[in-house]
Amino acid sequence: MAVNAMSLNSTLIVKYQNGSTPEGSPVIKQKSLNDLKADTTEQDAYDVAAALFSLGQNPVTSVLLRKSYELLEE
Image (cartoon, rainbow, N blue to C red):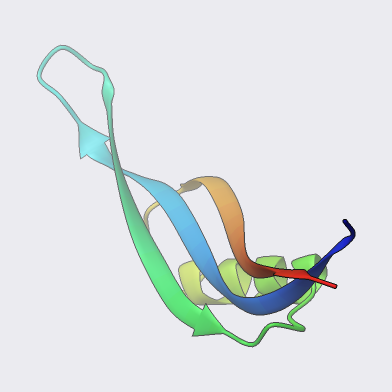
């Protein structure tokens, strides 16, 4: 049985440092942008994250792109 994957949507997750604990460890928080178009490229998602977070003061620690697919039997 063959299976096709149909792309549904994507979520952009940006993790950033928001200060530090009294011990000096970084405090990591995250923001998510949900329901990106299914055809959003990795480069476009990264560029959006970089542009948005360049407006703030918190350094970005990682950028994640989570894609959702529906698996369909042929």
